[in-house]
Amino acid sequence: MSWHSSLNVGHLIVGFTALFFVLAGYAVLASAFVPPTGIFLLDVLAQDTHYKYFALFLIPTSSYFVIANWVGWQYYQNS
Image 1 (tube, helix red, strand yellow):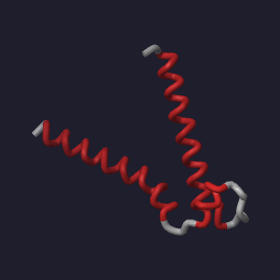
Image 2 (cartoon, rainbow, N blue to C red; image 1 turned 30 degrees about the vertical axis):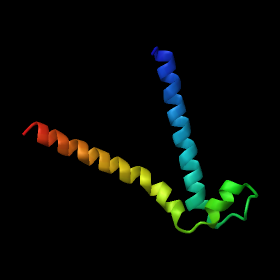
Image 3 (tube, one colour; image 1 turned 90 degrees about the horizontal axis):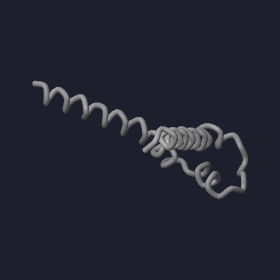
Image 4 (cartoon, rainbow, N blue to C red; image 1 turned 135 degrees about the vertical axis):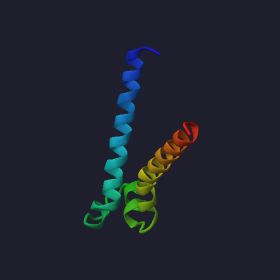
């Protein structure tokens, strides 16, 4: 894989991450203050009172779990 395609994959990851945080920010913060938009996905997120937080908090919780397990595995291997 050349560095050009790696750069494109990196741009895609950053783009999807930014899109996720914009949608999650709207769902958690802005949707309470904005009237319904008429866009089905955004209106469903705005009306939900429980699972919109699940999607937002799943990312950092999973990241912490993976990092903690990796550190534990490193301690196990090097002991």
